[in-house]
Length: 336
Image (cartoon, rainbow, N blue to C red; front, side, top):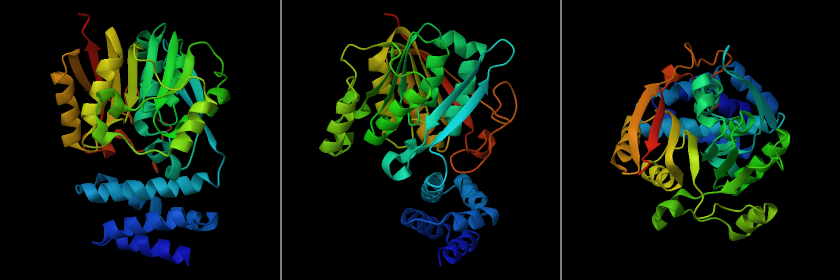
């Protein structure tokens, strides 16, 4: 029955009711799909067809397709090993580095359940000479870490200290597991901490409601808890940390508070929404703490930071498939 429903959904995606089909796919994935049915769906081109909808002009359709893919991928991960290794080559004068991430379910981690193209590109960029110069010997903070690939890479590349942050309890658990997987547990200067952008920005309207029991359990598992009020970092990293309308303001406010004088903010963003991307740049330009905001395009298919091994599907697509491509944004913190 589930196989039949999946096939029907693929057919509907070819018609005018793609939005409803994506919603139905997400519901089916949440209910649980057998491995054999998923394989038939994949072989029939189902994943490719839903992935293609991420390039649609309708924002609601893009959101529905993204959620369907996320839930399907989360279901797939339940049939596979819960960890995944990524290797990055920074070229002849760069660094070669590998990290292993702990993958978790979409239902408990939201968008932090997997490694996205933007994170892979930022990791690749950090391994190149330009990235190495930014993080080696510096204090680093990763915002909205998810699986934590970027922060883990920074730690392995020789950052003086790395603080990997998120605000989802299950994500924080998986990040601590990732430290163990990469031999970084107990390493001086490397830690996982909770960070809520809304609290940082003093915005109570966007503080999420979290189960206090779960939050207590997560904090109890780690002596570190959250950041101290006076914690500042020379480098702040983030990949795909802006999705919703409030995110540009919250991310910029958090970065402005936590970046040390003379420090650098480095963001890699897949530009799904030109409007949200423009809002992020506007917030950076308007924030007095930042100066010298610059933007460049990153290519995942060719060029210096290409990801030749990238297999499209689920959370990963090449830069040419996003409406605005993929941007590398850098902004310096004023030293005054």
